[in-house]
Amino acid sequence: DTAVSQTPKYLVTQMGNDKSIKCEQNLGHDTMYWYKQDSKKFLKIMFSYNNKELIINETVPNRFSPKSPDKAHLNLHINSLELGDSAVYFCASSQAGTGKFFGPGTRLTVL
Amino acid sequence: ILNVEQSPQSLHVQEGDSTNFTCSFPSSNFYALHWYRWETAKSPEALFVMTLNGDEKKKGRISATLNTKEGYSYLYIKGSQPEDSATYLCASPYSGGGADGLTFGKGTHLIIQP
Image 1 (cartoon, each protein chain N blue to C red):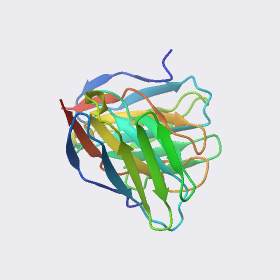
Image 2 (image 1 turned 60 degrees about the vertical axis):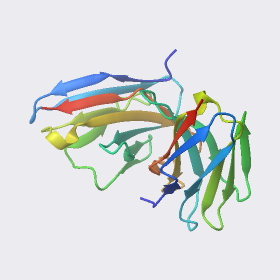
Image 3 (image 1 turned 120 degrees about the horizontal axis):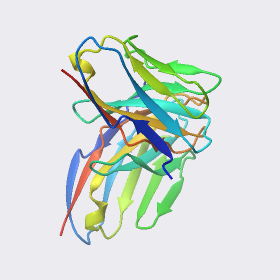
Image 4 (image 1 turned 135 degrees about the vertical axis):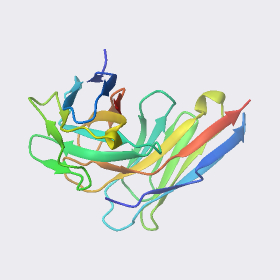
């Protein structure tokens, strides 16, 4: 019973394309997140989202947008992919103030 | 976004020895301090969430302390085992609101040598 799942696990695409990564959590958590693991293996917050607020890390390009069809899903849509977008993207969820449950990650490679 | 720092960056420890490492964070506007364990090819796994000054939490052979006044936390591992090899991350939320995303440190990469 996977708590936080992401699809796809691997995504290889051409520069300039638009792609989405899906995330689902079955924990009933109120808040979901997207993190990016950069080339130095450093985890950086991209977005935090619950039904009341969306907090965007100001360093994230506006080509990245989170979309939440319902409380259990927070998808990441990326427009006009660039080489520098290649990274591992982690989805996570939590109840406020508790530890985060992370998904398995999606390795995005932009050619 | 906060400045969360961890030291050392990497650590080699002999099996059976005990070890500890540090996380420092801004002491002003403190909300919480998280510790995560991240094994290679897996996802980060939450160990502790600490909020009160002087707090001490324990999970098996791993424990953590928190000093919010001076802005540091220690993670201790007693009697290290090979399965303890992982990167240990600390993190702090940048707000106390509901959507409390974390700012992570760069981690301490721990290698236990048999």
